[in-house]
Amino acid sequence: MKPQPDRDPFDLEFESDDEFAPPQEEVWRGEAADPFADLPPPRPRPEPVEAVEETPRPAATGLANPVHEMISGAEAAFGEVSLPRITIHVFCETQATAELADRAAGDRRMERAVVVNRMGGLAAACELYQGQPTPSLVIVESLDAGPGLLAGLDRLAEICDPGTKVVVVGAANDIALYRELMRRGVSEYLVPPLNPLQLVRAVTGLYADPSAPFVGRQIAFCGAKGGAGASTVAHNIAHSITERLQTGAVLVDLDLPFGTAGLDFNQDPLQGVADALTQPDRLDPVLMDRMMVRCTERLSLFAAPATLDADYDIGPEAYEEVTQKIRTAAPFVVLDLPHVWSAWKRKILLSSDDLVIVATPDLASLRNAKNMVDLVRRARPNDAPPRLVLNQVGVPGRPEIPVKDFGEALGLTPALCLPFDPKLFGQAANNGQMLAEVAPKSRCVEGLDALAQQIARRDPPASPKTSLFSSLFKKK
Image 1 (spheres, helix red, strand yellow):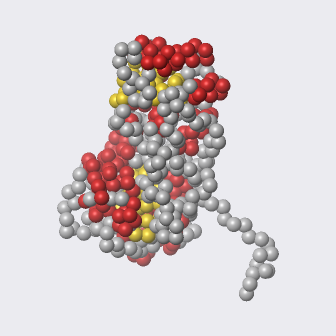
Image 2: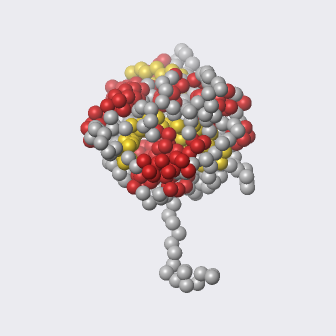
């Protein structure tokens, strides 16, 4: 969806270095652009204010390829899409690459693809396709030097179908070889050491549609138990992303019967996310614009109806379709999930780019948070672990699990600890305001701003410098 001048409700005000266009499609036997040109370095990630540094994303041992690191860092700031329903054949020469391919095949972004892993490398691929058609994508590993690799690829090209893409995993980190492979129509050339996520992103990038809208980053917030404050944290993070970081975002309240986003932003829209979920096939940019309400210049709200007049019997497919369409509307989509467990919530949790679990320092929260963390780690082995926010810390007279013990039990370091401050939070909730509007200099707001920077992977824009003499020449 392209922004319309003057009236666009999603005026994202991109900076010049904000690129959401996916790479151009590369086809076997076709010309390919050089992905090594003009790659921006990843932005530094600030540390949280109140508690503890964030748990880093796990990487492969010995990872030392700067090009792969730059590509992964740049792409991590944007939303990630899944691979279409295709067949992938992988021909490995080493056991390490075979294990890498198996781990990549189990990634959530490749769940719709059929991956067949074989040993034998480039020679086995040439032998197999003598008597059968080639699949959508062929990944071949070769330990040969440049001339041997090119000769093998020439043999593969003679029997390869025109629509097949080829990715080569080679041993030589040689830019001249890379350019020659691109000239011959190879879609991508990768050099170990690699981790599964780098291989997944290289493959998904080949099937990105250049004409499709960009995909915003989806952040899901859920509470470890009822009353943990996940909605409050989600709403304030969405507000911080738009107001402090000056970028567009959509807040989606998926707690249909009891959602509080409308109250927190002092909004009462006639339409909302329930209308979109009941007719997902009709949801287009125009209808989406009509159903959302503008909370600020950059923040739009998909509010929940918050009524008990309906049973809201909506299937998981509708939730998936609607959330995917909303992701094309803004760089960031914040999902406020209810404290229920269902098929659609499980799907959203596992498919979101970032997951934030909000808990209180008690035993029930610890048990439930551990169950969610274990589930996510099993289902998303190549992704960063969920972020943990401990809320309502320091309630007078209440026995609490220490923050350190809580984090060690989950194997996580809390990204943020919010102190118990009933006056601040109660005043904001009753006034229909965000915490930054009530007490912009409080420690809670500083911690939420720092967490928003971590999630968005960007720094706030620099404030304009004022001259020493500017006040002297100000018009009175």
